[in-house]
Length: 381
Image (cartoon, rainbow, N blue to C red; front, side):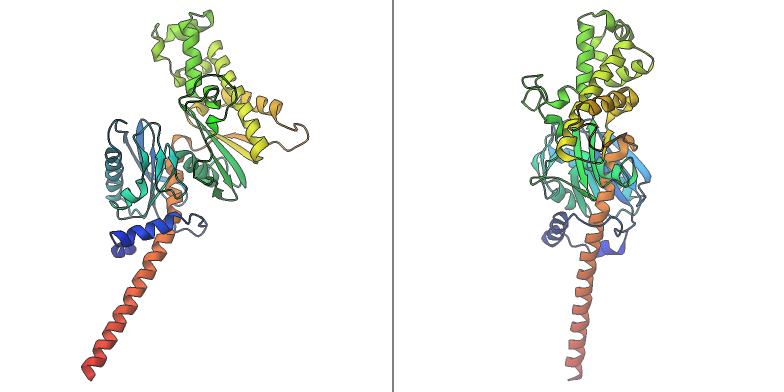
């Protein structure tokens, strides 16, 4: 372990330092310490942790299943601590970054709401910081993934980047001039809940017609199951593939069949892609970025999805033909982007934490010299 950890104060003093760090995000990644950090990506089904170096390389990775959401938040925290301690046995870990699938407050301490876990206004950073001997950073998983793609992936050298993560739903993040834009309350980037069809499909968020109800993994599977349940002739291929067990239809299966030439699966991915392009055009009108990076599990369909998205984007872009078009690229870092991004963001916190501890050590040494000098003076008197 590093020397600075030896001077880490436990209790309220240490918590104060960590809170100060959390409210001051902006630290240049160019001057951040080139030390290994742990990134953790927490989803509805898995917790993935990895040691990441300053160049975004994963030195080691471990994963486990996410504890059932009916269990207490403490159970998930225990899982995180176990993974970090396991990696710390083999690596010199200087900080821990958490990418959580949920809303994280602007101070990046509390998980306000996590749809797949029982976190409700949970002070995750402070709880974990009290159990680990390194500084902790918490952020939304899409923000973490966007940061990774900006630093090491498809969004390198872009000044204005928007990331869209297509999974069960739609997540997103905004980066401008090397900063993640979180909004006043920390919950910016929830693009999936923009209304695109008033009175449309009901969304788990409680509203109708949300974008993710038309362009996401859930939308893809829902459409396929509806066609199969109706015994549509176009669905015979996938019905045969699942041997009539319609409940077994999944997004990866649809992508696989589309690659093999199944006409219905190709059409469904085109539909999802077209809705994706419509939403991207709306975001371009609002944010005017130079690049959109498409990530998440559904993006594995690649040009079967992104090709139709580009076409729809050009058709629906405000001022088309008279303005520059943003680049649309598939994410490069795959499912590990959130983990890599969380680790890299934590490196910025490690820099601040090391400075705070160095100043504390210097004060202690000055005081020790003062006490020694005073004792010497008293003895000579």
